[in-house]
Length: 228
Image (cartoon, rainbow, N blue to C red; front, top):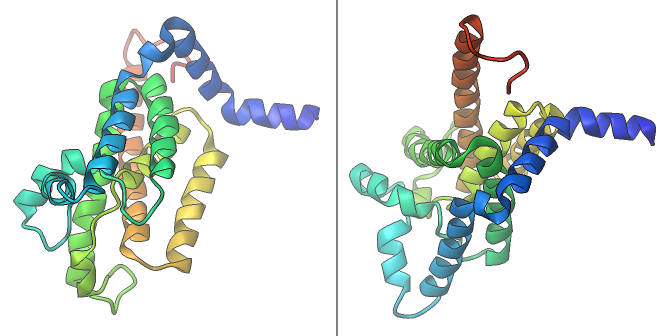
C-alpha cells in the first residue's frame, strides 16, 4: 500500500495540489468557462435533436472536410461544443466537465481555450490533408470521409488531457491517453480516431513551446525554482 501511495503521489501529486488550491480559493467560481461549455454542449444537443434545430446546428457548428476552408474556420469555435449525434451526450458532457474543469483550474481560462482550440483545429486541418493523400497511405483517408462531421469536443479533450498531464508531470497518465488513442486507430481506422492523433500532435507541439518558454524564464530573474 505504501508503494502504491508513493507511486500515486509521484504521478498525481503536483496535479492534485494545483486542483486543491484552486478549488479552495474559489470553488465552482474557478471554472466558469467549463460550466458554460457544459451548458452550451447540452443546449446544442437538445437543439440538434429537434426537427427545427438540426439544420441550424449544422450551419453554425458542424465542420466537414468538404466545406470551404474559410467556412470550416468560421464554424470551428462552435464546433467544439457540438456533440456527435450517434454517441450518448452524457459522455461528452462528462468529458468536458472533467477535462476542461481540470485544465481551467490548473492552466487558467485562456490557456485552456488555446490548447483546446489548437487541438480541434489540428484535427480539422488534418482531415483535409488525409483525404488529399487518399486511403492508400496510413495517414490518408477515403474521399467519403470528407462528408463526415469532425470529432466535436473530443479532440479538444484529448489535447487538453495530454497537455495537462505533461505540464504537471503525470507522465504515465499522459502516456496511457496516447496509447488508448493509438489503439483506437488500430481497432477502428476512421476519421475521428486519426483526428485524435492529430490533436495529440498539436498538444506535443504546445508542450515543446511551453517548455522552451519556461526554460527562457528560468534563465532570467524572477522565477522561483520548481515553479510548474
